[in-house]
Length: 393
Ligand SMILES: [Fe+2]
Image 1: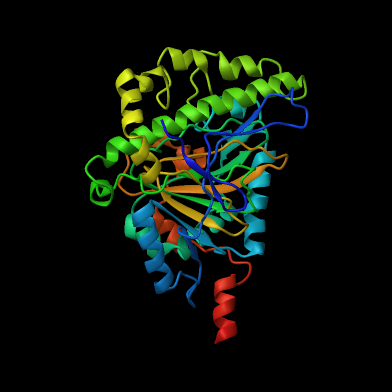
Image 2: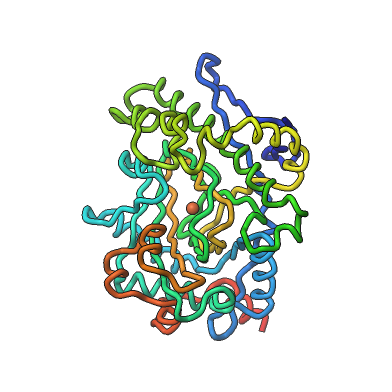
């Protein structure tokens, strides 16, 4: 089996499997790092706003081209520093609320041990005004996928801390456009979201990558998740050896040997019993292993993991059925993202609540994309693009 080509920090391509980095003390457990590509220029569109505060036509055309081809697009400088600070404050206020509504998605175990704090934001005036600002700026893009009547499914904060697990590569429930807003810089070590470009299910994969495209992208997902299982286990083993300060009492057991449902922990019990729908022994049948070997070159050529590291003010838009994963946070600094999701189709409440985490205030008073577009939007200061236009004009 061939392994993914990875890129070192100097940008030179080097063939490796896992990069095994040992600490100065060679007796320490090896630090296995899941390698990704991080060249972002193919996916980025510098945000430029017109006098109405919306993306310019040129910007929209660029964004739609990238979004349709790759399944996601990264708008740099969509928010000013002042606006990002407001988003960060909204997140801080929510996280500090002991009665906050914790999300059941991502990893419940990580949430329980405060490795992540994924929770819903209430439909207050400041939160909706911030969400409206984002929706109104990207309206020409998001309206291509979502009608005004389609509901806002959730507004959440995705905060992660050191020691969290790397999520398995997965697809979110289909038929949704999701947005991540970086309200502070997010480094790779903090866990910028990983995407596998071009793996969204828009019915054009065969046209772009040949008749076996779907089969190959699922194989690549299996291959990636096998790495992630080993990566998470190695990381937890290393944390266990570091002693009391690294893992909470019972945490190792709950993350590795628990029978409780959690799709994003390296839980061996559920892996062996085939009860993890994201990745389990069921995904490693002899036939699959043979196909992984047979298609090893095609997989390496066609697919790669891309890790984002959005700077403050950046907004990422992605199609929910694109393969992606939230990495672990390897830094001492919390990773904070503001997130919201809008349906591309009318949604049954049962399906909506099963796949997303709306705050009770959003369930009580549902909000559509049209409502957001008409809502008074927060605006602290002109963003870079608009400033540039004025300066050059
Ligand atoms: Fe996800």
